[in-house]
Length: 495
Image 1 (spheres, rainbow, N blue to C red):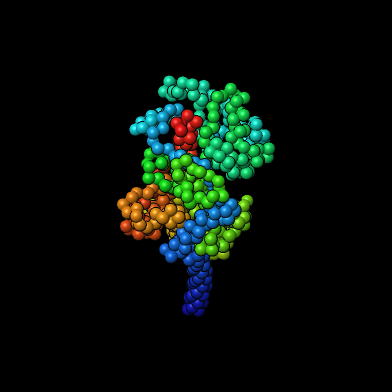
Image 2: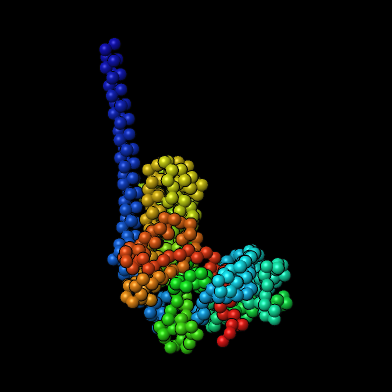
């Protein structure tokens, strides 16, 4: 009997030791995985670091590239395009004006009744129309005739609140958010289609002439008086309500900036004599690049796999199209090399752009005790059924790293514009107010991003100078702004 007890005791001890060994190995394996995952996050954080000294280098590089782009055509990655907008809205504009906003698979048509000095926008209406997929790959005549038909229908349904001056032709501001080489305020040749459009017979043609021809076929007596992009429209919309607006920045799916340049700062090779002594410059700043930009292996991989490798580098690290995918790429490496989500890598984690920036924003802003928003996003987007609270915290940390880098680099770009204009110091402008009009879904809806951006601008400028710089949300610049530019460049203006 005693021997049996002893044997049982020995077996029990051996079993306990074996179980302890298994548990110990699991603990060690889990600890190593966690350490590896945290090491990846730490490396990303270090590579994405944006200390003030680096941001100042980025700002200085932006200013240098602005000068180079203005000095000679093709002299910089920044296009620094002359927009021919030399007559920004003043608030005195009066009458009925229209806008056509074409920037993707939908387009909008607007009409705006302006009340003249002190009257502001009396009334406005708009309609949004989807473009049939077949017209995105067909002929230019078919596309523009479709657009013109919807425009004619919009005009035909006009109510009594909208009145055009007797004997005048209707005037339209045309927001065309595709690459164009502008030749005047109301003409520009298409460089290429993007965003899923493929209509080869339009490339190199004046898109205003194409639209005008289509409107004439519809019997629509309307003239395009301003051809602009959404950033210039945002600047115009901001200036209409605030005379201190000097620049505009779009931070949405993509990004761009425009600003008001003094006429004497535009080299003579442009051959222009702005009527008002100033000209709006479309920077196309998404294409900015510099050795000072803090890039990671994930940024390089995203760039190489994109449709335009080596281009739009700045845009790829600060705009809404890409932020979520950078986070996804880091999570995928953590899953592959540190088993961050278990022994198998979730297949959807390998699919580009499955994590959209709005989802990244929702996770970043999760303040629930169990971080349930993060858990639900991981489940619905990547089919990760079970995620620990610890892993959810790491996801939020990663979102913060990528969003913070983007916001601070965008702030550095804005400082570059202010330096170009001499508004980054007090000088002789002490006490004067300068406004940057902002628009775009990223800025509007990603609160942590926009707050970081604004805080960084203030940090870069210093307490005293930053009091003179105002960042102002200017909504719907691509629509209202185009109508306002049609008004400020009307063919019926005196002189």
